[in-house]
Length: 540
Ligand SMILES: Cc1cc2nc3c(=O)[nH]c(=O)nc-3n(C[C@H](O)[C@H](O)[C@H](O)COP(=O)(O)OP(=O)(O)OC[C@H]3O[C@@H](n4cnc5c(N)ncnc54)[C@H](O)[C@@H]3O)c2cc1C
Image (cartoon, rainbow, N blue to C red; front, side, top):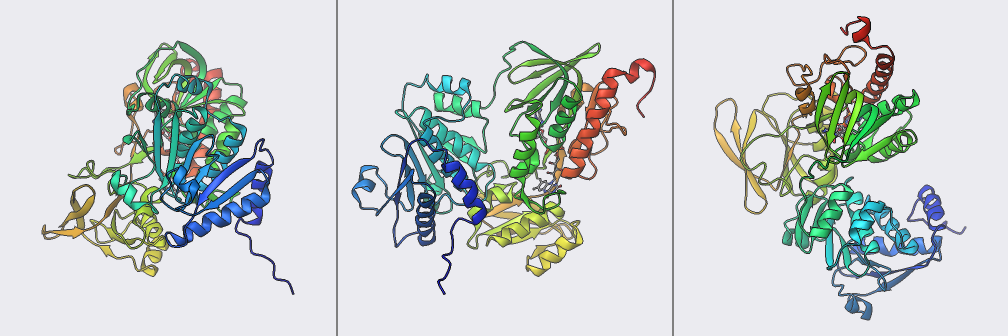
């Protein structure tokens, strides 16, 4: 019997990819420089990927070359695998296999090269057209980092928009550790322009475009005062709580805008896999939030990369000032979530991105192959991060300042099953290193003795701090831990101000956030129609 040939791209993905590739206008040549000796599995990955993609569309034209070939010399390729997308026209290079999250970036790069257009905003394209000098962009990425594809994509878009001036290289950090070391890039994504670091982490589009123009980091954007926009409701934060509230608010007829200082999706967008959101047995956090955002933008505007910096209340109207504009609103919903808590020890800030991390799914890949790291903490997050790191091949130890964990029992059992050691009663006092982390100082909380532990990385997982700065400015009451206190309808003590999701404390989950977001929107609708402060009902 004839054996069925095993497919590299799975049947389901194949169907979707084929549909996308059918939209290609022009053929795209991809030069794939491969070697039999170095990085063997990654070279093999690229050979299979391009062979199967070209079988799905005759518009993808792979050219397989060896490191010393004429093409490799012409384009200065010395590393394998390297992929050059339509190199006669564009300078788009993938140094390392576009695996995991990066496979999508590579496919989009091919599709955009075929179309000759990108998804950048009109404003960004206009700004880029003012560029007069050449720029080389390097973005360090890893296959498991959920932030990386978007940062890489921005760099690819720039190279397509300004093909004569901008060259872009997407560098897979694990396969190119020497390059990562040379650039001191020890977390992902990191973007360099003309070899200077411009961004740690994912940057909003407009910030990155400014950095390309100036070849320097843009850290803050001044309030430009572009005039007021009159809204019924301004939602601060585009996590699950904010997006759900906006869907419900607009559907009930309230003119709503969602302002998000970072990237749409909040904490969920950096969660590798979600397995407890009803309806989805298993779904990538980023995918789930992309779906939620797709639904939300059917109804409402979402302003990404715009930070709410100040809010004032006058009579029954709020003036909300952001990094870009000014809005007025009858009601304000705070869904600002919570941020990773910092240890506050010497070395933590200095080595952030150089061995100190708050996100195992983003930076863990760099420590696989047995690098030694500690996870600091004793709750669910610490246990989950440690299990994730162990799973990808990191030599991980938990450091906990108590003699028992707070993590759920099934997580504790998994730690035991995976033989993850725990240093009990140990408090981290200092993080040491030179260019990168080399070790930590620990104190035994019982006898106060200190010891040093050589490690390559420190993952901090000690919980969250509510993002309550705006609430504080408005005089909104918070509990002892800083979480906003609300009534059953999600009203705060300040009339017209509401809160939902993680910022209100309690059970911090996606289902809770979406439930609270919907309930808050319903209350706001009721209150705008029949203000409780005018009809004498007091929020309890
Ligand atoms: C690693 C990890 C794994 C998790 N896994 C799961 C899971 O498997 N299942 C589950 O149900 N839950 C999980 N959670 C919890 C879940 O992510 C949160 O409960 C949920 O994201 C809360 O949603 P939210 O909308 O309240 O806040 P967030 O998702 O935190 O969103 C708040 C948003 O507000 C924005 N913001 C803050 N301040 C401002 C400002 N001044 N201006 C503009 N924007 C602002 C932030 O940038 C952020 O995007 C996980 C959390 C983490 C960290």
